[in-house]
Length: 464
Image 1 (cartoon, rainbow, N blue to C red):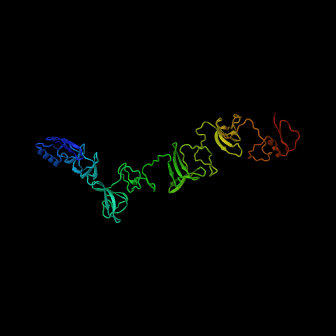
Image 2: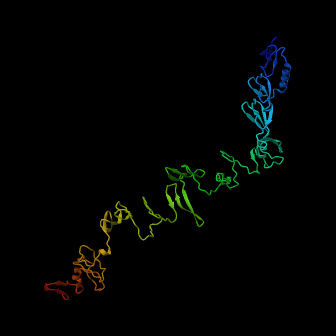
Image 3: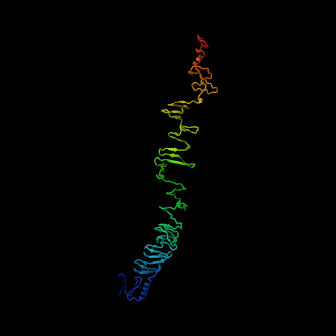
């Protein structure tokens, strides 16, 4: 009679006829009246004892069957499609193969524990290897006068580099490099530890040092301060046209527009002053006055180059304008034009003294009527030769004056004195009447003989 072999769930594994052996599974199944079944049965028991220990998996496994994989020294179970490790931690130097999700592996080289996620082994801990010693975060409890404080300590190579705390406190027991722990992140003071990299914000900068560690790592003491007077040894560049604003009301501004620079005093009617130290005395040689928009200069002014004035020039401290130069030049650099001195008068036609370029001579006058100014070279003592061209002068070696004819108007009254020092030139009429000094009668000069007369009369007769 044949045997029908069922699994635990009731499904049929196989049917064995009498006197035969079935190898459908990993163990031999014997039919009724099979001769020599004892050896096979005993081998089946041995296989069950050793869980089919072998380097290769059973060829006809059933779901739930165990197999001792002698390659990895692991007990594996058949899940219906493949043999998978049965779980538990495996301690070895290399990761186990054919692991199942949740399997643990202890790395015997690094003393680290891994868990299999279903696709790879993920480190559980510690984060450092045995060769690296304590490195990374460690949660610790530190005693203090205010009670125990839970902190997170960061280690590197078994050295505590920093402590992260939610509050400020002083440890009761000495902690190397941590005399005081601040709320936040405190670095080990014995290591000279610093934050290095890119930082977008800081509440404070240590300005106690000025030694730079490199060209890109600058000591805090080398930064300009905004809350106190400070000094820089380098050039300061304001790379914006908005420029510089100075004063609690920003009275002074230096700005740029279209490459033009503007220095402005922005307070209404207030001055922009430039001062110097003259022998310990502060002086203000230049003031730009806000009240009238003028320029006040105090002290001597030296100009190298030309001074061009488009408005009026007023000298108010004296009625006399003084120039130390020996010459005063007008119309400099211009084309030929009449130029000189204008004296403003009460009417519309001012008095002028100027050089007339059309005549090449100096002229003077007013009311637009001008006469040439005489020079010594324009005069002569020979009025006869130069009549009608030059005025007369007695400035000659002899002091003589020569004229062709001379007409004199009456000079004073009749001659009444015999003073020989008198230089007044008499007229003919005076000469004719000088004889009145002798008798009071008319004395006559004529070509005819006299007729009649009085005692003492003179009569001059000359040939016609």
